[in-house]
Length: 288
Image 1 (cartoon, helix red, strand yellow):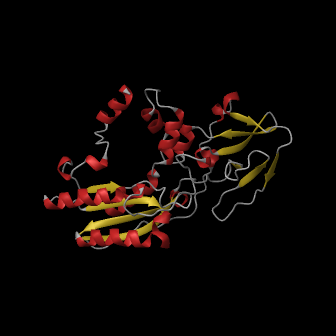
Image 2 (tube, helix red, strand yellow):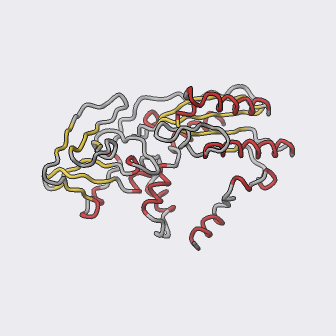
């Protein structure tokens, strides 16, 4: 508990958005914001952006922005990031309501999608963004590049090929391997008999890009096939490897984990909840 309190103080974390007011925020040029994706995601319950859902935290952002307007302190830019299901027909009504709210406050909105693999990071992670500018011309979104030549192997550290991290394939299990990459550039295999859950039974080639890393669930436990002493085994990617697949450096990870007291699962969750660094950098370049 002491470590948590220290982290909150160190980062000036206001903790609970429902209790934050516009007056508490210092003068600033940009607000970046998001909200739980479970009510939007195809993997979630898909309740949408309506009041009473976890995704309705979006409307707390509206309250704060309107409080800033009363004080004549509206930030010049707003940046929203979330899963691409935000732009799906099922969420169209709620999204349009939000965009109209921002337009009424004087913002011009630009909606776009960007994928990490098109900005040098070997992860199939496409996300939805909304950049809103106050009394400005419409923002020009970054232009995606080619799919990166990097792969999971770029960040795979053999030092973690240890007994506690290795999963031997029990007798009778078979790896159905297909070297062909799917439309997203991923080479994966199904481990027969490993589990009845299809997503958990997936393992990935070190020579392809990573699937979308998530905070929880099967893709927070990204398994790769590696070879030790001529034997095929499975190994789960470790937090420092997942952080690098989010665009952070080893140095970044070591600073975040400097006390060495953050549970492993929390470090994985932080990676899955983050935004790929290089994607943000390209957005900020175009803003500037």
